[in-house]
Amino acid sequence: MTAPVSLVGADAAPEECAALLWHDLASFALRAFRELNPRTPFEMNWHIELIAAQLAAVRAGRIRRLLVNLPPRHLKSHLASVAFPAWCLGHQPSAQILCVSYAQDLADKLSRDCRRIVASDWYQGLFPTRLSPQRQAVRTAAGREGREYPDRRCAQDEKQASARVTRCAVRSRSSWGHALREKAVSGERRKTASIPSPMPKARSGASPAR
Image (cartoon, rainbow, N blue to C red; front, side, top):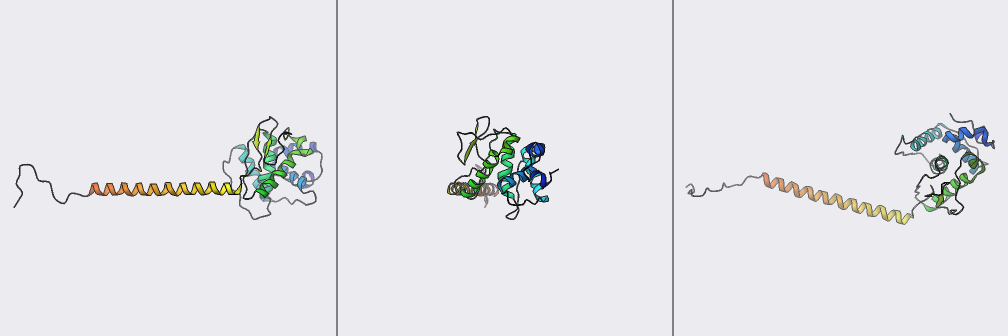
C-alpha cells in the first residue's frame, strides 16, 4: 500500500515513513519528486503505482524485460531513471546499472537528479549508500563498498551509439544474405541430385538397341 501524499510528499521526519520508503517504490518516488520539485504538487495515480510495482518486480528478478509506453509528462523518466536507480542502490550499493538515453543532455540531467536524491539528508538517513568523494563526475559514481559502477544516468555518445547500431545492422544484413545464398545453393544441389538422367547408361559389353 502506498502512503498518502501528505505524509511522504511533505517534510516529514525520516523515522515516520522510513519503513514505507524502504519497501515501497511508489512512495519513494513520491518523496524523491518532492525533493526535486518542492513547489510542484504531486498527484498520485494508478499508473504510477503500476509502473512502480513492475519496476520492483524487475529488481526482485521476477521480470527480466520491461517496456513502458506512455505519453510525455507521465513521470516515466522520474520513475525508471531517477527514483528506481536511487532506490536500487539504496538496497544494494554495489549494483551496476546502465542507463542509455537518446540525448547526452537528458542523460546528464537524469544523472544529476539521481545523485541529488542519493545525497539528500532523508535518503542518507534511510539507506547506507554514499557517493564516493573521489568519484563526483556526473557519469560515474562509486557505492559504499568502494566498487565503481556506471551511474544510472550513464549514456554513450549519440554518434557512437548510432555507429554501433549501423555496424550491427550491416552485419545482420550480411549474415542474412549469406544464409539466403547458402540456402539457395543447397536447394540447387538437392534439385540436381533428384533429376534422373535422360539416357540410361549402356552396360559394358552390350550392344545398343536398334
